[in-house]
Length: 125
Image 1 (cartoon, rainbow, N blue to C red):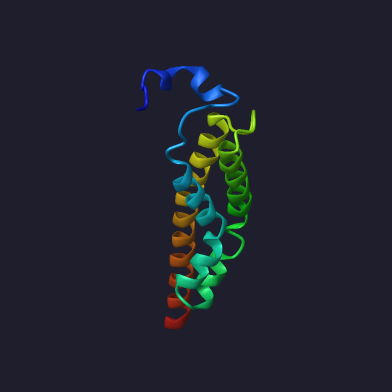
Image 2: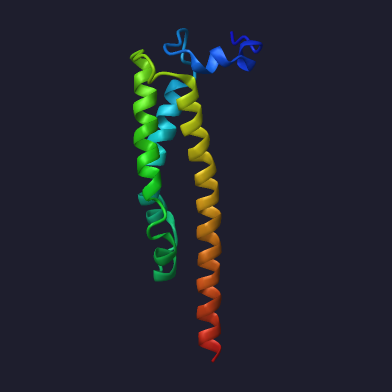
């Protein structure tokens, strides 16, 4: 059972080798594997036109780095490596990945819409 009073303490986040069950470990492992391959997944399930490909190009390079860092942190937590298994690092990479994922998809949607609008304007001329 999680003791919620410990969540407010700095020792909870900065413990160099946290013990106990790592309940969310497998979920985080799957999340970081998904983050690692999000670029190729998006290209495969997205629209098959050149405007979408231009919008997606060079948007997902940062996710490869975050996915690898997240996998290293989760695996070091499973194997109880001191300092690499700190909760602070793992939560930071997880939140950064979520924030970048959301902002990247909004950015791609905005660029794609802008490209489609410019194509429509060119067709009407």
